[in-house]
Picture 1 (spheres, helix red, strand yellow):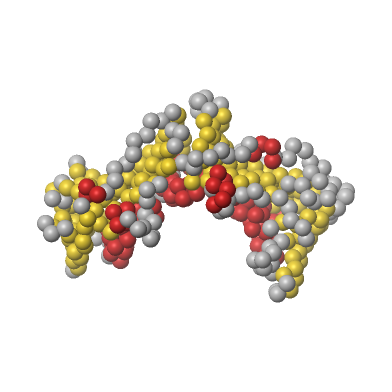
Picture 2 (cartoon, rainbow, N blue to C red):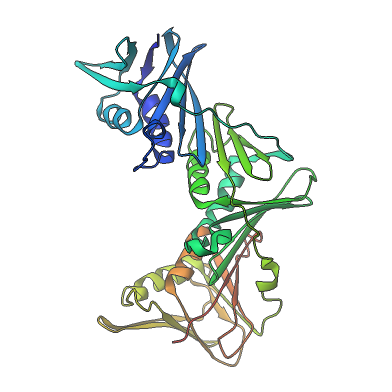
Length: 381
């Protein structure tokens, strides 16, 4: 029967990842539980929500091998409240798990291990390794433009695809498009899958963790599943969205009549301030561009109005340049601009305008990050 000693802080972190995977309102009791398996000096923690399966191994002192399942939320709530110390977990013979810490003891009800599902197997058609940092970069640059409209299920995730030596991530909600990519070390088979939003969020948390961010992640792809292996001790298996992602290359503007180059932080801060005046029903800000100035303004029906002016400057910390003699007035949903400007940490941002009538999609690039591009549809103002 299971008995082990584990450091509280080690267990807290792993339970945090597990709890995030498990659905809060799971109608199947077994799936609300976490399976604990003690063997060979490790504790394996398995959690699932039917679409995702997470397996983590942490080093512990195993006094007796065994496995049990217990409520993920209850165990996590208890361990998070305990001081940093050693915990002793002991399986009792009455379907209970005993947790002993400094001056405290808990007995939690358990469920049979036989009712907990095993991780599905995967027959990968493509497998490769990249750095966790690179993978985090392409997910963070695209996750915010995933469509939340469930009737457009093929847009409810990030399109991960390989073309020659390039590994792309792309997402769109019909109003904006985000594309980010990295170059692989070697050419592999072209392949494309749609990773669900929930899966993207969970693997991003894992790869950004301090113990993983400087490591590599192995990615295994099949037609209906994707498997991530991080730091050898963490495995995330996810179902994929069964659908066809649109050919987004057709939506990327191929030419422009004018270009705005501006300091990213100054632009982002100004937009954030002016956006305060807008209301949820119709969120829009107006950009009035000329060679000398950029005016950012907004009118909120119930709040008033606001404007801010940025003047032309060649200074690195306040750079602003618009390269067209003809002025341009164009409107945007401020959240769309804010999402892009927060996703890429670059000093300068470039906006390419292809239509003086301000109705055509706008291409956004970052000179210091050439492998990130974005397209946003303007709005009427």
